[in-house]
Length: 231
Image 1 (cartoon, helix red, strand yellow):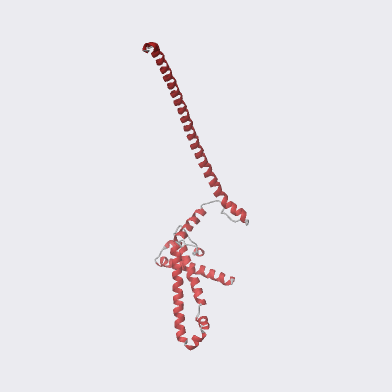
Image 2 (cartoon, rainbow, N blue to C red; image 1 turned 135 degrees about the horizontal axis):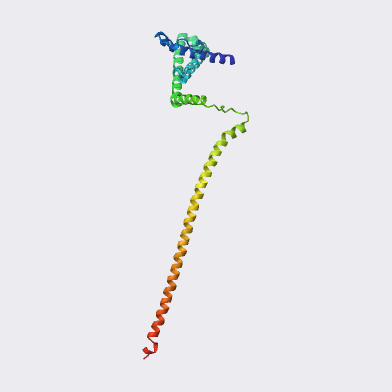
């Protein structure tokens, strides 16, 4: 099984390279001199400078088509007839027609599912993003992350930056809240002082009013003795 998978991968790679070479043949036929003097061993290598990078979506489509062909081969007429042997013995030509329709319908359904997968999964956009990440990784001198083999350590290395960012964010929010509380406490203290001053002024005004009333009563009693009004 492993040898078959390896052969399939090699055949897919050869088809990909062959497809790319076929696409370049018209340029050579028109006398395009850009490919002259190039290394024959680098025909299948992508080149960003000449814009000949392979299209990941086309490669995906080629792989899926190759896998579909392998899958259809397993649904051969021999296996199909052996499954429905009584019907095959009764009418072989009708069985061949049914098998042909079955293969066509199966291939069409699978192709529709692949197209729907590409459309709903936005595969072209994701593959373009993968190209951007690949180009960015080439310009990054730091080594790429690799698992250490210890799940706990890898999990912590993934979560720790997230928790550190959350901690920094919480500290910043805490400073903002503390500053707001300090400003509110200062306003409250200023309000208490203003209320205390108002109470002091009101108390002083009441004392002055009481003193004025007392003085008025004293003057009234001195100017109008009580015995003058006695009958």
